[in-house]
Length: 574
Image 1 (cartoon, rainbow, N blue to C red):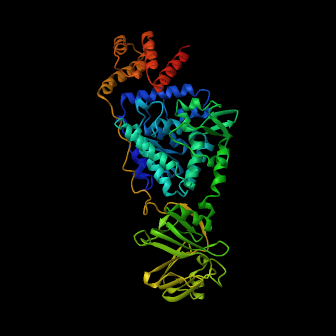
Image 2: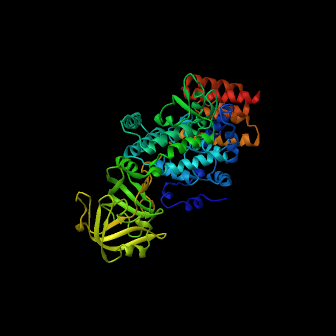
Image 3: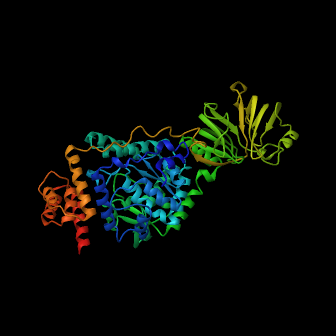
């Protein structure tokens, strides 16, 4: 069995800080009882509404019904499918989550929802992440769709507003799940999310992909508008919404198309509409239709300008293979709209095939980077395609004064001091005492600014979110300093843990302990879940009546849980 540490060691260095170690001993007997109740209840309530793959997938991915699964057990099953699992704490930055997915790694939240929030929790938890997401990995088409989603998601361009919403939603989930949070704390966190959601900001690529992810991976239906089943993990892990979503009078059903990207979602409320896909192949078709319009595939001036508007670090890849990673703050174009010069501001990295070029990291290019794009006059091919001997014939060689006239009118003039080549292609020239000017004589680079490093390539073929080499230029230096707090457990609740343990032993050994059942029946301070487990074993009419009384006098959530559980047990025994 592969250990958690072995799986983590296989990950790139920039992802490892986001992984946690599952301490199985930290789960209380009540945590296991919560898992058991909800998994049995979900299996019962989803018997007719979940896609059949779900039930097959639960067993084949190491998701048992009786106790919280170990990450190692899940990995043992996922490895047979070509996937792996790691434990994480709460929400991940979207790009990090997507990269895990692209690498066929399922990120599973460590925490399990609290007893008080059994019906719904805003925080990621192990029920949602494992029992919701893992089962459908047994479907090859779906698994390929999920991985491809990750590949596109990790290249999507995000904006500052996306990151602000991520932090606000993460904070809201932490506050809501922390039993020590005050009403004011929760209201303040909710207000922050609402304020950001109400801001009129054009959705970024990352935001549009997040919407598609929400309406498919999390809240998707499959089939026809009049005959569908559930495959979305958010629905499959929610007792309440997996039932309410079936009411076509309350929840509008729409055929899945790219128009789903126009529909925003609210993570804090039930969804007023859902989208129905015909098949996993249909999911992939919709994803690819959006993907081919993304900046990472489109390239060119429009992609560079979109990245400039986003105001975040992106990687611009020239057709030579050189990658420039930084915040774009200027894009010059010619009269027909071709990009002819770009500038970045702040720390910038130069890389090739995802590896930083030696000496060209963010410390060296701390103030930014600028370079022309395009072909030279009197040269038939891209400058990157010329051999060293061919360059000499065009009077381009090291330690000589070189003048480069671009078709755009930009001129580069200085002493060529270095040529960087990769895979028999020129990707970077370095000049000293260099002047760069445009067709109108405006200075784009002055000799007093130091060495001019010129990217080589006649087009920018891709613009993707994030840096090229994230180990050398990490986008997220560490997980958010706010993490999901350990659930507060009262002394009275802790005293009940022994009862949960004894009931589990009775159930597993099929023994009887009338004294224990009587003790639970006559103790009014106990959790309803303890009494439910005692009733499940004893079928005591007195306990059943007590549970009905508790349901009638408690919140809607408790009533739904108890009544649903009793209905399930009645169906099993008839």
